[in-house]
Length: 132
Image 1 (cartoon, rainbow, N blue to C red):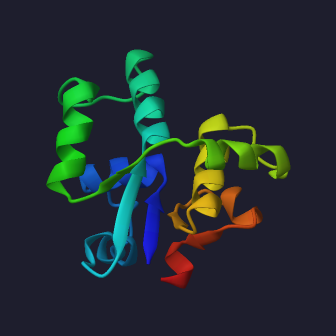
Image 2: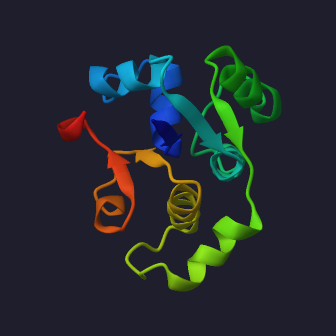
C-alpha cells in the first residue's frame, strides 16, 4: 500500500504521541508499505513553526528532513498533475494544505493516513483507526 501521511500523523509519529494508535504505527513501520510525506506538509509545518504553533527540537529545514530519512519515509513533491485536480475537488474542506494532500493522494493512487473526519468525506482512500 502507498500511504501518504497527513501532517499531524507525521508529527504524532515522530513524537510518540498517544493519539496515534498502534494500527497507524504498524502500517507506517510495515516494510511492505511505501510511506510518503508531501512537501506540502513540510511547508505547513514550517509556516506553523514560524508562527509559534508548532515546537520542534531544532530548525525545521534540517529536523524534518533528518526525521523523514531516519524513519524511511519518502518525499512526495508537488506536481502539476496533482495541482490540476483542485479544479474538480469538492468544496468540503477549507484547509488548503489538506486539499492539496487529497489531490496528491488521488493523483498518485495513495491512501491518506489521517484522523481528520472532514477528509473522510472526499473521494479518496483513507487509512483511519477504525479500518486498519
